[in-house]
Length: 356
Ligand code: NAD
Image (cartoon, rainbow, N blue to C red; front, side, top):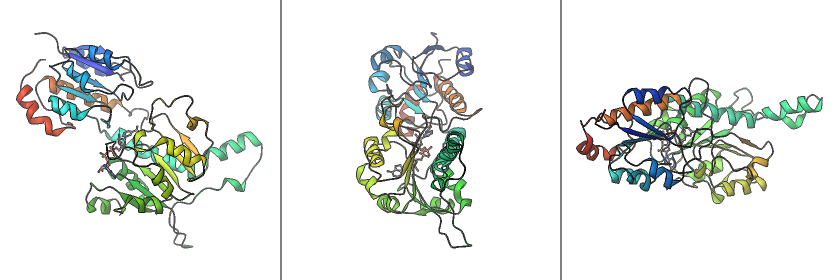
């Protein structure tokens, strides 16, 4: 029996541990050129050629060359596309489902919990003027500067200060973790997510708003935690930014395309909002000539690694994807299938048929 072929389209396995697990199980690995540090690699044509005859594809995010129908069609044996990360917006999931291929992803707590912590860090960095105060001391030789006032976040019973309002868009894993972590701070939290029940809002202490405009008008901080879909693409664009308070800040750790980057730049330049913290961008890596790279402290940028922490980050997702690939090669349905509607079709083709 020929060895199963696994195309790792965007490898992210610095220790080689996952690759060894696959090789020890008898797989032949083909490694793509993209990697986590610079997620740009082979062209679609090259990827389609590399995927020929493969039984599995796996990798981290690869927005520069998404996993298209053409790439998946280049192997009729293909059983699975296994992502190490949470998002599958770089895989044509509809095409995979049509072709009877499983798409799996890696919603590990180290990843989504890391995003929630990173979101809060970025919000506080902006609101508490952390960078400015530090730079002031290191570069001016001065002392206190009343220009460097921060923002008090929570409600104060002692003087009835109301606290700020946090608007959470998307109350999934990350949005609800943000709410759980921030609840003790005592600010008012409002949330917009048409797809989760009232009970979830109650559980996390978030007041439900059924109208995104209301959230945008009332929030001092707006944070985006939606998945990227046709519906959420550019869900925050010029008209939505125009509803925000001029003093408000926007935090995006979801996906670059959930936000219209051009409209955001315009809103920042014209002081329609006060600031933004961005971990994700429409084009990644963020182009060297992006106006965002030249903006002052009102903008806080990070290179799509808000969830990356020592000893966690991608590794649990990588190992999960590895287990998913091995399960699929054994003819078993992995436990993290994203396109669940394909499972029965998949089982009738590959169920119980091991090639390991
Ligand atoms: P999730 O699926 O648990 O939650 C997403 C939520 O968005 C769901 O509750 C869903 O109901 C809601 N939603 C969908 N459409 C909506 C709409 N039109 N309006 C409002 N809400 C809507 O996902 P998650 O694990 O919480 O991840 C959230 C986002 O963070 C995703 O885009 C994911 O790709 C991204 N992410 C980024 C990083 C990073 O490194 N920056 C890491 C992990 C995940």
